[in-house]
Image (tube, rainbow, N blue to C red; front, side):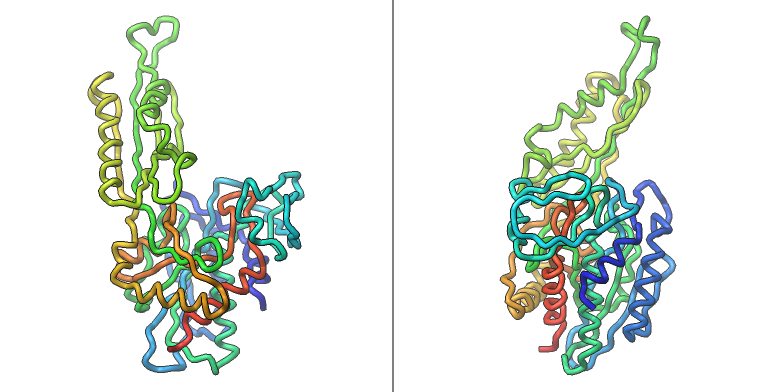
Length: 400
């Protein structure tokens, strides 16, 4: 079976995670896909495939060659919930270049999405424009299982022990929370959760969240002079303290940013949720200090306790770990070249399960799936690229 055929099945499962939930996994609907994947792995002959109590899928393909490292392959099952995730209707579209018209009337242009033209001559899987596709990261799951199917079907391909894991809740930053690194038992691993084919990512943002609570005083506006403290207005003033040019829409490459993700409230109380990102650890720490000082500046003007802030680290740049394991990167580069793909590395302007797992003792860079426009109704992936990624994964685990 081709990887894309699996993807077309998997995207029918709504697996959006929920950051407001305190359960594991955060949404029960992720378990439906988890159980289906475990059954599929059992059907391939991975006899230990199972779903654990927290919704993680684990399985092992035993070695057929001694003296090889134990390699892990990891992808996540959940999707973001920022666009509609139910009723996904994927469309196969031969792409000959130029703009693409989706069924809902949206038009995707190469100017808007520069990676589009590189997929000319391929067959794309796109959405109808009304929902997310879910290739992030169901494409990674499909590519991993297709690679396993190839290895099972051809015992002449020598390989060591291969460990597989599919995680819940990666999109809300919890994918590694209850990952059983010791039980997984891999010497190193790869998440298959990136963009273009041949992408090998081992640098990511250092990340933190800053949650501000602004306490106001509600008074009838007709008699508010000298007494009202409008938390909504103070929220606008607080946001204005942050540099306008250091936001996601104004930065690229190694440039860090502050991002106001959520703002809600009333005159009496307002909550603001920022995320803070930077590849450089020293600049990251400086950004956190700035975020704390912004609250202090507001309190100096409006009184102690008017603004509270809670700053919590989320994850760190995995390069700190991977610099001691560059053989893992070289292995991925060789696998790409073995199927005619030139590998490329770029800093991740985000994070993956792999960055946290690397700091948990499992070196774990990220590999591209072939997808484009993730977290969008305009998400797409080429079926030919999915085949290439599966072939790369086979070469990646092939014994040396």
